[in-house]
Image (tube, rainbow, N blue to C red; front, side):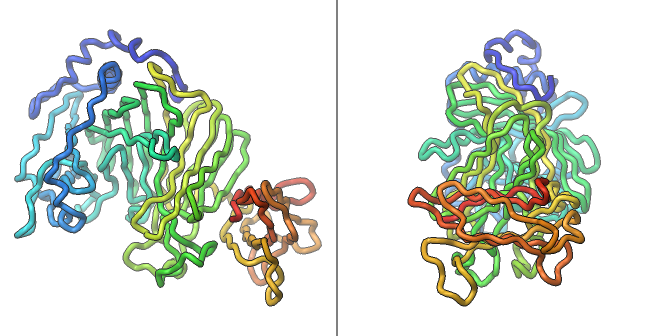
Length: 497
C-alpha cells in the first residue's frame, strides 16, 4: 500500500521476481530490461551480502573545487534531452554508474574522457560523479545528484540552496553518522522538463531502492514524488527519513555573528511543521553555541520542511549568491507514517560554506536488522511558503537582544525575544481587542511580555518577552497569539541561550 510502512524480512522479497534479478545485471552499453520491481529486488538481495564500501579514485583528491570547475561535460554529448554528467573531484571521488531508460530498456553510459573537455593545463576527467538536468537552452540546470545520497533543485528562481538526501543515519550522534551512497542511477525522460530518477542505495546499515519522479515548471519550482524502499542490514539507532540539509550562519536574530559585511547569510531561516493534529509550528533557525537536537513528536505528520521566508534582497545585499532566491523544501508524507518525530539538528558554523542544519523524520519504532521499510512522500522546491496561510498569522521576523526597557539598564540573566506576525486574520484588531500572547517556557521563566499591533504596518503584530533561562538552559519558549481562547497565529518554538 502506497505510503504505508511495511515490516517484513528482507529475505522475504527474494524469489518474488527472480527473472527481474537477472535482468538487472546490466552489461555496459548493451540494452537490458529494467523495472522498478527489479530494482527493489536487487536492493533486497544486496542487503543479504556483507557491505563493501565503494572504491574511491585516489587521484581525484588533487582536483579541488576550482580545478573541477575547469572540467566540463561537452554540450554536444548531452543525454536524454538535457542530462549532463559531473566529473570526479576531491569532494566527489566515488564513481557512480549511469544508465538511460527508454521503453523499459536500460543502457549503461560508458565513461570516456571524450565526454568531457578540460581547460588547457588542467587535469582530464577521471570518471563520473553524478549528473544534472539542464533547463531549456542549456544555459542553466534545475536538478543535480552528486555525492553520497545528496540531490537538490534550483527551485522557482533558478538558484540552488539547500539539499535533500535519500536517507540520514544516526545524525546528531557524535562520531556515528553514516552516509549511504547512491551507487547507480537509471534516468528515464518522461517529458520536456521531467525525469524519473531510479537509484540504488548501499551502506553499512541499509540498502535501498529509490524512485524520484521529478518535474520542473519554469517560474513555479520543482515537484518530486519519492518512493523509497529500505532493507535494514543492521539495527539503526536513529533513522532519518526525507532529510534536508541547509546552512544558517546569521540573520536578524543573531547579529553578533555577522562578521561579514552582508546583513544576513543563510539558505533557510526556519523549520515549518504542519502536525497531524493540524497545528502550524515555526521554529526559527539559529547558529547555536554548541550542537543542538530538537525533537517535535507527532503522529501522521501532514508536512514539514526548511523554509526561506525572508525574500527581501535588501536584507542580504548579495548579488552573487542571491540568498533571497534560495528555494524552500517542503516534505509532504504520502499515507500514514504513524508515530515519530521531526528532528532538527544544528551545530555551530563561522562560514557560509558549511551546511550546519539538518531536518528529518524519525519513526518511533526502531529500525531492526532484516526489516523492509517503505516511505513515500512528495518534495516541493518553491519560493512560495506552503505554510504561510493568509488567514492565520505567521512569523515574519524574530529577534533576540538584551532584556529590559530600551535606554534602561539591561536585566541581568535574561534575554528579550521579539516576534512579529503578519496575517489577514489580524485585520481590524487593536490594543482593545483582547489579543494576548500565550507563552510557555521550559527551563526558564517569563519576566515580562506584551502583544500589540505595529504602528503604521498593515495586519502586523509584535510580541515581546523578557525570558530568564535557568541554570539548566537554554530556555525553550513556545508562544502564539490568541483571542478569546482561539489561536490567531502559528506557534513559535525557539530556544533562548
